[in-house]
Amino acid sequence: MALQMSWQPSLQRRKSGAPPLGLRNLGNTCYLNSVLQCLTYTPPLANFCLRAQHSRLCKKLDGGGEDKKRECPFCILEKRIARSLSIDGPHDAPSKIESCLRLFAEHFQWGRQEDAHEFLRYVIDACHNTCVKLLKVAATGNGGTSPDEDERGGREPSTVVREIFGGALLSQVKCLSCSTESNKTDEIMDISLDLYQSNSLRDALRCFFQPEILDGSNKYSCSSCKKLSEARKQMYILQAPNVLVIQLKRFEGMYGSKINKDVSFEEVLVLSNFMCKASQVCFA
Ligand SMILES: [Zn+2]
Ligand SMILES: [Zn+2]
Image (cartoon, rainbow, N blue to C red; front, side, top):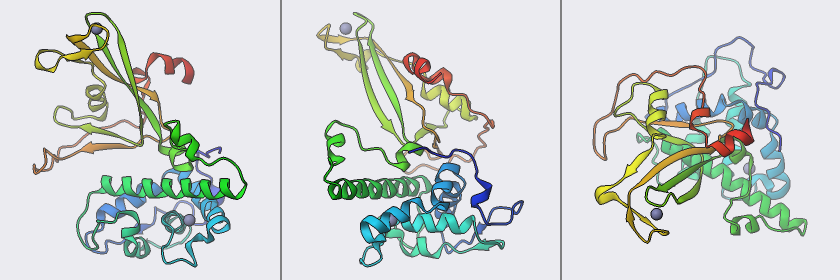
């Protein structure tokens, strides 16, 4: 599936030059509105929604949830994003999403303040899972292989959601006694950054990818040396997502207060210093 990464003005019907459509706060829905605005202004997702690419397939394969009790979360999100980019006027109410909140996040409660990043993760997961379900329906209908086979291989099947937001991190531990390296890959949909020591996005990223020495009571159990030894642990970006979501952890501990300081960021974020050497070659 080829993503369209740049804005396609021909798809949007909202008057060009008009400021983005505002979303009214329906009572503690600022977390919901901010997530919807971010998703609406993610070009590859917006283009996909404006073309109704999900709902057309969903209707064809699954009836679009129309004749079932349970509605389809991706169809609802697609409609919301397309509406925000199509209607004129200063603002609108995200009533449909709010009334279907539990389709995305079962334990979220109407009217209660919730966490924006948590909500975003639920929305992304709900849409990804919907696409996986459709892939299975399509594969079964065609008598083909089920995407389950990919899952058995340890990888989730690729969906538009994964193609937009999905990436991979490499966690590498190198034993300082025998130099044996152990590598582990983690698929990611975002990166969460601590802000304790950083006032800028660039610095918070530098801290995240900084090597860590495992020593003292934190020694590494090396399978080659067959003992606890000192080791160097480092994270790298193995595959950079097309759209990188970054969560700034603006809370201190479980019940701590909010970290309200300004965090600066530049318009261009260069990730090459954090990429692992092998992928620098592949993705250069
Ligand atoms: Zn759908
Ligand atoms: Zn070792």
